[in-house]
Image (tube, rainbow, N blue to C red; front, side):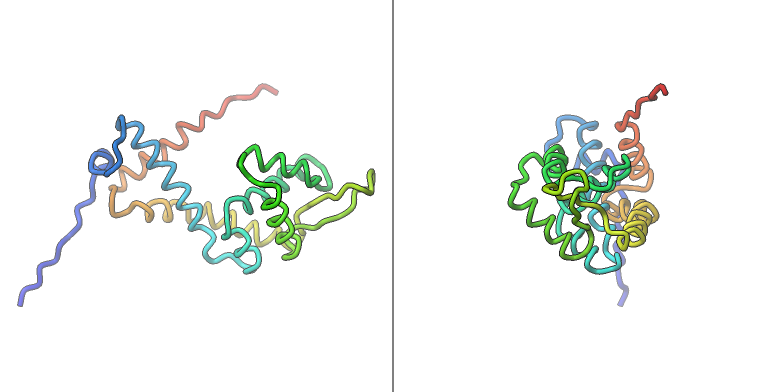
Length: 187
């Protein structure tokens, strides 16, 4: 008996957007939404093999967790020993304005309990608690960020591989960088 093998034909980016069940107002709107949706999905998939598991589970449980980590890192990059709880909450609310204080404190406490963050008293004001990244998390976070970058292209194309040709995937990736519009800063 002859078996018929059906080969999927890759669509062009334009065909994929046109055949989508979303009513885009323009091709550009479809490209933008697809480019960024695939990027967010690929970032979500990037942490699948992260060690230690306590960091993996913390990051895996939501965007708030990775935002907490990044906010603390960026604050410490400014030379501060740590960031206060209220300042950190304000930083989180800039990104996720509807974050409740109760949920934020719960997630922060879980990070401290899992030794992802270190909680210390401020030397300037003993009533103030500072949060910083645990030194034990530096290597796992470095591995996490490098795995995102090293595997991002494969993850990105895998998210939409059956829908769009390689040429379309490159067009989507370039759309992200084109829309970034990094400005030259004068020093």
